[in-house]
Image (cartoon, rainbow, N blue to C red; front, side):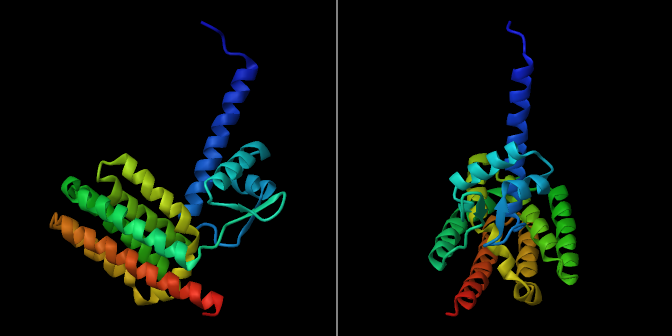
Length: 228
């Protein structure tokens, strides 16, 4: 068996660091950690993630290829803005995919899953009360994907994550109105009640309502920003 050389080890470590940087940046984008128009350089990302320039550059290149970032100059990328048409398309896809995942999740839910969702919702509520919207968005993804993973359909989850990567940076446009009206809180409570009843149709409806409420708010935000 061939021995591992120092060069092989260094290459493997670089690959692992690049994969970790990519995963972390991708997760931050889906959680609304960056907003449309935010600029990003290799150096700024390396500092933010605590890595060297090579894995940071690899992460930027991969996410640019996926359309999650776009070049604004030779050394600078930005988080793209969604058009109203883009938002409508993403929303229609999310309704189909996330509705299916939620519906499939009901049969696999156990009491400890519901307890965890209740804990996450408490964290969301606290974040909304203190106007810590970045924290609310972080917990919001935890809530949604805990349910979606119960579907037991990993390829479906990957498709859903791809849509969140597109729309995640725009989620900050939900606030403060979405927090003040408590749309998400009500929809999440409906989802928890549906899970307690093991009601697949009601669970799907709760998540679809959440997506539609978010769409209406984000559409209004886009129109306001464009002066429409």
